[in-house]
Length: 319
Figure 1 (cartoon, rainbow, N blue to C red):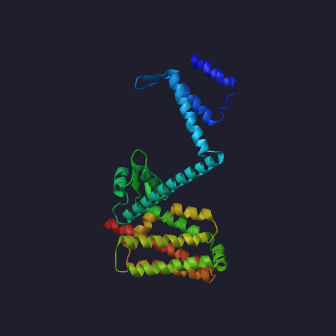
Figure 2: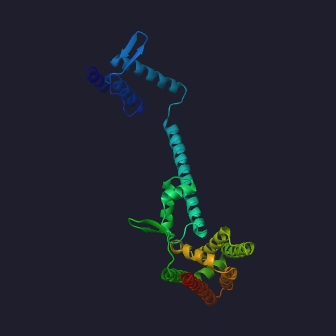
Figure 3: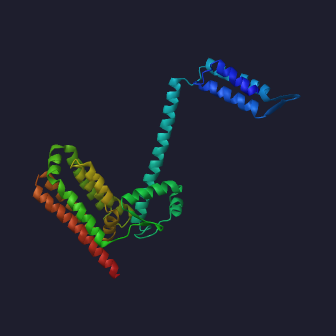
């Protein structure tokens, strides 16, 4: 009855409930008064609407003090607060993305090190323990690698590291050749008029050669990683010169990490240097503005990769 009378008074007084303060005060007072809560100070016990009245006055006093100290959250302060919280959320998301990137890199590294082998079933819990993280970022990383065709998903059986398949390898490299040949004229024109593109291609080949010299007599994970990174970057740079961003995205989706790594692990160091020299021939044809020679160099480069993967797979089957 008292509560109903209180509501009637508030309505008649046209209290503005658009202000969060008024809504908070009313809610706290009614919940305190009607919930049966009691507070005892020595021999004095406060309960019901008496306690609600005291709580209401105390809360009003708190709001008054905040106003005097200018700590109340005004519209401008609210915007600043929201901005701070948004920035915090963005940083948390960035950290999460960085963690996912790290896991992707670790999985690639473990594939190269043969700690994760083609066709091997993936255990998310084990990977999370291996990389010292929770299962969620591992699952996100695996989904990313799924789109890059580094892992495969089998309904009701889970994910596996992508298996080696000779026919698929030929199809992937054939698609790569089509992509490389489609914009040869535009790529030559772009590099001819843009020194930044020219330098990027030249620097990549020179750095790749130096890396191969550095690891010439080694068979380490670092060597295979660097070889793959520079090889993939070269082809990405080449396609970026076309000006077609979708083509670059397509390259990322068909980039044969499993097959490229397989070749790098099995082939001789002479073949490693041969691959770099083929890249050098490609950019030289671009610099010389010789489209016909460029097309021939591209065909030779891709065909050599197909021959290498086919030969390596056949040898492995015989062993």
